[in-house]
Length: 397
Image (cartoon, rainbow, N blue to C red):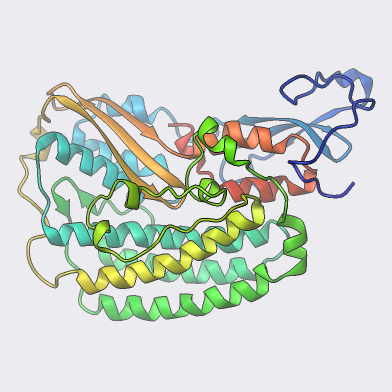
């Protein structure tokens, strides 16, 4: 059977008479008609350590259930037993792929509750770290979509270029994956000597990659056949599920926290929100390719505005005995996957009362994925998962 179009696909009710109103099936495994298999947790088409329990009839998915629990978890409860500054090594692990958004949201929440204003240089340096985080993620996910259909060369290109950005992270922060660069009050330092020159050299290589991946992947007949019209997200699902980021923007929703709720100095940058009008695998991936180009441009704009000297951190109390003012706040930012929010509550003590993460992955990798997989061909499961760009630690927090 050919790869399904999930919008138009309808089951043969004579073959599957036990279909329920929600589109799932009343499965009788003893009938020999259905079989259950596990996809993951260790599988190249899985976006991290999670697993899918699939019910199949031939090569068609009748039902899918997301299973997590293979990662570190319980972080939100651990925060209540650690002082505010002691939470930093943990918040960054809420999403390994993009730890810097956790740093920013958490630090900004503490600053808002404490009434701290960060220096101008710190705003630009935070924006640089956030856009570098977006860039290294897109260098993974854009060619990674091709990898799910057997196109491996783009993945090798992306891994090499991502390593160059990790080199710049190591130079700026001392770490390649986890950085802890954005602390309450600002950042840990200014740009190293020669950083701009080395970053520009890296960006020029990425400019070339953008054109090559367009020809090799997006103009590829096999890639188009395997991704166009597959796993379509109808516009009416976006608000029903709380879908965000490229998954929503590809369906025509012009939503980006950097524009809708400007933070730091994003209102001083020149960029438009990328959108499309049909959220299938192809258009979601193509939109991320456009985001990749835009991120390169934003990094260049930011580097032109970062001062070479001046204050980069405001004065703060002794962090080991810092009692945060009683109150609550919600801080949001725009990650490569969509809106990333932190709800932080303080009771006036040295410990957080509550820290809650609003990450896109809980919706995208559970509710949305389970619905999109119903009726899908088994060969498309990996491509569908990667097209939603999930980060499993956000689910297991």
